[in-house]
Image 1: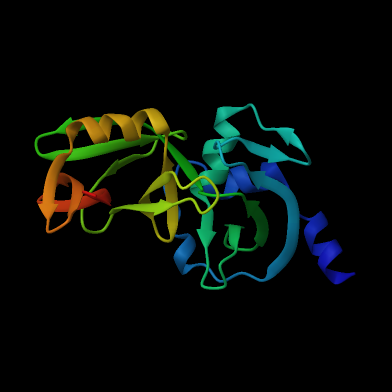
Image 2: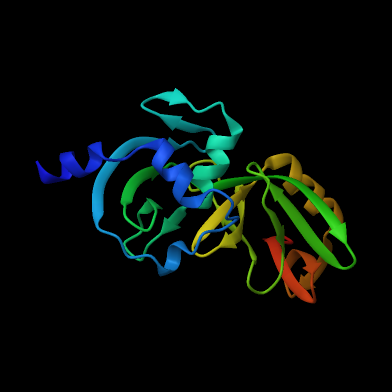
Amino acid sequence: MAKNKQHASFSLEGLLKQVEGQKYPPVDKWNPDFCGDIDMRIASDGTWFYMGTPITRSRMVKLFSSVLRKDSDGKTYLVTPVEKIGITVDDAHFTVIRVDVEDDTLVFTTNVGDKVAVDAEHPISVHIDETTEEPRPYVRVRGNLDALVARSVFYELVEMANEVKNGAKTELMVSSAGCEFSLGQWSAE
């Protein structure tokens, strides 16, 4: 019952007042009490839902995304100095919707407007979907938060990639900020 009372104190207006004007509040330094889970979900395509309804106000989505934190327990939370509220994430926290090349660096833009320069701290990783056997590329955005690279952006990366032969395997590699990242490999057989 106490959790429900704490949960009831959650207000969008209160959250706005606490973090307005801060691009990335220091959520990693805050250690508030857990107030329970709310019916908020980030779908695989990057759409945010509250109680089953899409959140269509981009300002609200950007606000929520600025106070996201994924903890060592694997769960994702909205965190303020006084509340920690669990939400559901179907796949990744964000979606990469654009790639630009600035100097020798790949710069991704996410669905919430974040710019991420791909480097050693913000690496690209590619996982193979067990069901479809298709590549699922991700980039680390901040903290433990990742973005799924949209298929169209992944195809742009593939066009930029170099083929590197390593014995019987060929690997697609892209460079960014002096680092090399694999987009996948396959056997020559």
